[in-house]
Each structure stands twice: as C-alpha cells, then as structure tokens.
Image (cartoon, rainbow, N blue to C red; front, side, top):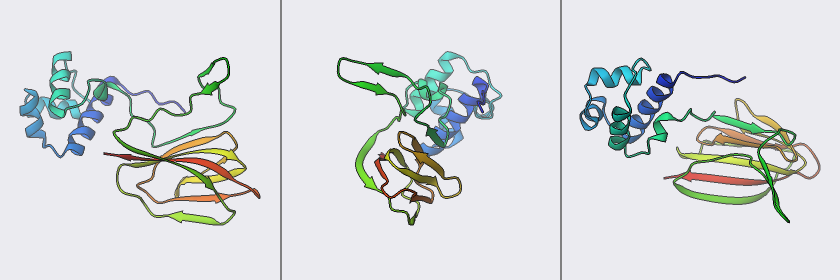
Length: 184
C-alpha cells in the first residue's frame, strides 16, 4: 500500500524529528532559523506553508542538507522480494540490482551469517543501529519481533535493530549477508 503524504506534513515531521534528535528546543530552533515559535510550531504540525528561504534557514540551523527536510521518510521495515522489479543495470561482466538505499554517517559492518532452524531472539541494539539482511541461500524469518518477515533466496529486509528482533532458519542450510549499520 502506497501512502502519499502532503509536503507540509513531510516537512513538519522531518523538522520535528531532526529538532528532537538534535536536542534543540522549539524556541531555540525558531530563534536560530529566524522564525517565530508560532510559525515553527505550525510547520511542525504540518499546517504551515514555509517559503524556500525559511526552509533553508531551518536546514542551516539544524545543520542538515535541505533535502533532509523535503524527503519522505523511509518505512520502518522495508522488505524486497527477489522477484520484485527493482532498478537493475548491466555491465560487461556484472549485473546489479538496487535493493536498498541507506543514508548513513557512521560505521557499516558486513557479516556472512548462517542461520539454524532454532529461533534466536535478539534484544534491542543501541539507538541508531539498523540491520539489512540479504538471503543468499535457504529461507529465513527475520525482522522486528512483532512483525518478522519470511524471506527466501534473493529477498532482503532492512529494519531498525534498536527494537527486539529475531532470526530463524527454515531449511537445512540458510545463509545471508548481514549489514549492521551504526549511525553516528
């Protein structure tokens, strides 16, 4: 199901999320961005129609690119099936299919994992940690403990690992590439 958001709602949600993540009060951001608290509150509620100069000022005050205010937020869990028509490019010897785009400031750890038939429950990792799992062999159920996805060879999932999650293999041999994304 595709949900379209009004640009005002997108901008408002992004400003509120970025301000909160930066630990900046509404009053401090309003002052730094040169807008009134009432105007900023309206923007954060998705009720404002800020000008480009206001958005540039808020982006500068938040120390983020303008696009961070304009981009629709990514879903919390993104599953890509092997059969899905995703962007693909071909070269002389290599073909590549885009699975996920992950914006990151931090560290990426890449693991080759084997997943047994037993269930492994993992506690929440630190805030800012995501996992991206690409199944290379077999079938694996993984993802947030309250909404795991069963994946087959070629499928992938990306999710917030700062919440409890699980892994369970279903075949005799189950393998995956696991990317642990640690945001700064």
